[in-house]
Length: 99
Image (cartoon, rainbow, N blue to C red; front, side, top):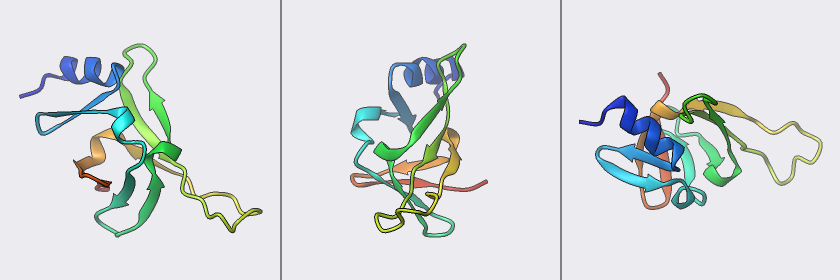
């Protein structure tokens, strides 16, 4: 069992705890983000912006930076995803689930 305090400290230090495993944020940068409910590819984690609680250092969410290379004049699709919605981190992708 992971206490909330442990999760906050771990997120501050650049780690995500999933089912007892610890993953460094730097290991996530090249992974694709996939929504398991819709099958939508939300982009690469390294293109995302993190939303961090200033007082605690806890990662609240991240904003996907999915944009097309051919859409020079289009606004990129950006979607905020809650950090708690990460369900699985695989070798090449991050699976998220909508609530």
